[in-house]
Image 1: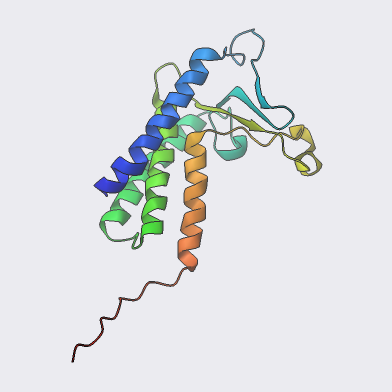
Image 2 (image 1 turned 120 degrees about the horizontal axis):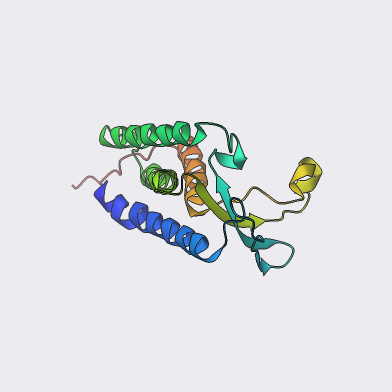
Length: 180
């Protein structure tokens, strides 16, 4: 577990916190203060960097709900505990599932840190994509996929890897040639 923590979880956690610190330091809090929202267009019409606060979960579900921050913070602590226990009991038997668990820990820890930081109490999202046809399915979105961050990306990649590992055949022990 230590190897994966040092190679994946810790560096990605630090990247997540550093990028969020850059956003909070350089983008005004237009949600709580009467200032203009800052937007940096990286790829015009497709990708921009913004500052969004989210006390809820993915896609802004329960964002702003009373006690949502505490509720999802508790879920984060429970999830990290469960992952650690499962790891120690061999619940992640192959490399793909161990990478997924390390990514999950990184993402959960990154968003949990945001929820617990003094004066914060929300997750900082900043990656904003305008996707073709998204507005067709979600007209109120203006075509913008919900903003996310590095931790959210780690969680999504981890989910994909866990699904992939669930459908993989367990590797059979290699057979050594019989010596005559």
